[in-house]
View 1 (cartoon, rainbow, N blue to C red):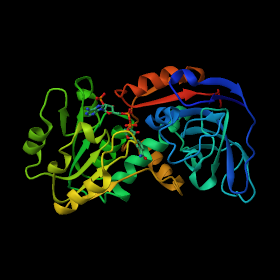
View 2: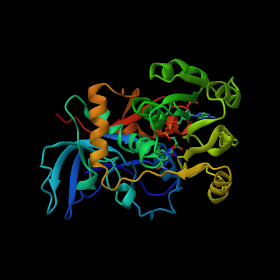
View 3: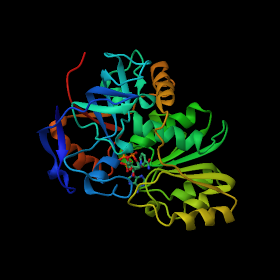
Amino acid sequence: MYAMIIEETGGPEVFRYAEVETPPPTAGQVRVEIAYAGVNPADWKNREGHLAQYRPYVFPYIIGFDAAGRVAAVGEGVTTLNVGDRVFTPTNHGQGGQGSYAQYALADVERVARIPQGLEFAQAAALPVAALTAWQGLFDRGALQAGQSVFIHGGSGGLGGFAVQLARWAGARVAATCSTPNVEYLRSLGVEHVIDYRCENIAKALAAWAPGGVDYLMDAVGVSTLPYALDLVKPGGTFVSIPTLVDDGNMPAAAAAAAKRGVTRVFSTMDDTHCAATLEKIGSLLVSGDIALPPIKEYALREVAEAHRVLQRGHNRGKMVLKVADLD
Ligand SMILES: NC(=O)c1ccc[n+]([C@@H]2O[C@H](COP(=O)([O-])OP(=O)(O)OC[C@H]3O[C@@H](n4cnc5c(N)ncnc54)[C@H](OP(=O)(O)O)[C@@H]3O)[C@@H](O)[C@H]2O)c1
């Protein structure tokens, strides 16, 4: 099969288009023929070598978590999916497997979801990591309730676009930060109180909106951009950080400071075990129009270096995908 591989960690220039062996699915696995691969900030961090604490770097190495396409082969014991089914998945990349910047990738069947009618491959490829992380940070780890005041720091990125909408769908009142060019975008997603971090004081703006602090805060940017975040959460509230791997501070100290203030402090890394059901639920919310897809920028697989350059600047609105193949 063909793939964008790296043979050393480094800048976007390390990507190389190459032919590599097509992986056979083992028991319980599915091999997906990929139409589109999704791009996430974890991918450029992976390319630079920041994921070394989580996985061995064995070269040639294929980066990329998210994929959408068709089931091309199934391993022994797989009975719920058939060759030809339209699927999307965060693949087995988080478990040390090769990634999705390739013609094929493997995934355990429990992390492969069916694409609902009405969603295209490019749209489905934009979902897994960003939408699952948003869902888990809000509901599974954050126990968000209807009627709560919710503040999403970083509402206009891939993850933030899902987080603000899912919080609103769950019945919360939502405030979120973004830069000036994204203010109208966040309003269009239903954010009640948009805070332009480039020209507003976040603490003052939030205090006027939720006196005494918010019930729930999600930091989807990094601790250095909101060092006083704990002060913005009311006692008894919840403060969820999405670990960035590059800007997370001292987590045990942060947890201890929150406990002193009666705030539940959570560091919520995406868990993709048995994620197919959650992905299908999110897909159905998109099809029903309860939430909308963020804007999706499309690049060809061979243009991945440019996609990484743009994403790494840290101000991409919505999501980014790589077109791998024309599949029906
Ligand atoms: N640990 C995990 O399991 C996990 C999973 C998913 C994501 N993440 C991490 O979560 C972070 C967000 O992911 P993403 O996919 O949303 O990234 P993204 O698509 O690159 O979005 C980042 C957003 O951050 C905003 N931003 C940049 N500087 C800011 C600042 N000073 N104040 C407020 N907002 C600022 C930008 O909005 P503007 O352009 O409007 O400034 C941008 O849209 C990344 O670090 C990613 O690696 C971790």
